[in-house]
Amino acid sequence: MIAQNIPIIGAVAAPLTAAIGALIVFISANSGVVSSSRLSYSMSQFDLLPTWFSKVNRRFATPARAVIVFGGVALLQTIFAFFTPGQPGKSAAIDVLADLYAFGATTGYLLVFISLFVLRLNDPFTPRPYMMPINIRITYKGNQVWFPVLGLLGFLGVLFFLVMVLLTHQYARIIGPLWVIGAIVLFAMYRRKRGLPILKTLPRDWETATKRVLMEAEEFKSLEEYEAALNEHRARTGESGVNLPGTPR
Image (cartoon, rainbow, N blue to C red; front, side):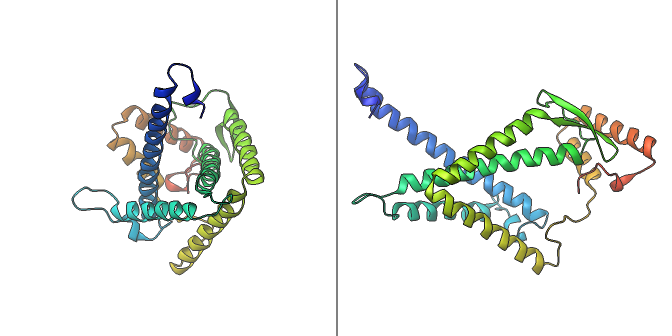
C-alpha cells in the first residue's frame, strides 16, 4: 500500500517491494531449516536428542533426516496458519506466522544470552579474541572471569520484548508456551528412557574436545593460549584434566 502510492516510482516500487519481501522470506526459511537441522544433529551426538537425527546423507553428507523433519514441521505450521480463521471471510495466516516468529526469535535470542553467561562463567580458559566491549572482571569459583555487561543489558532487553510479545500477540501467547512445554516433556521422556539425568550433563573430556576443534580449525594461536591458560590454572591450584572447575560440563 505504501510503496504503490509513492509518486513517480510507485508502479515499480510496489512489485519490487513484494519481490524483495518474498526473497527475504525464502532466505529466512531456508536458513531456519539449515540451522535447526545442524543444531539437532549436534544435539543428537551429545544425547540431547535421539541418535536418529545424527544420520547423514551418504551422497551430500548432510543431516537429511533432520532437514526433512524440520522442513515438515515448517510445512505443517504454514498449513495450520492458512486454515486459522481470522476476520469474517479472511484467513489469519499472516498473524499466526508473525506471532510464532516473534515468539521464536525472542526466545532464541534469550537462550543465546543465557548460553553466553554460562560459557563465560564455566569456561574461562577458552580464548575469546572477539569479545564484546564493556566486560567486568569478577571471581567465580576461584577463576577470573570477564562478565559481559552488554550481554546483561541485551538479556534484559530481549526479556522485555518477549514479555511484550506474550502480552500483545494472542497466538504467540498460547502456541509458544505450549511448544516449549511439549519440547521439554519430550526431552525429559527421552533422557529418562535412556537412563540419563534430565537436568545434568554427562562427564566429558571437554579439554581434549576443545583442543581437537582448535586444531582442526587451524586456530593454532588460540590453541596455545588455551593450553597456557590451563597450565597457569594447574600451577596455581594443583588441579588437572577434566576436573578443572572452569571446564564446561
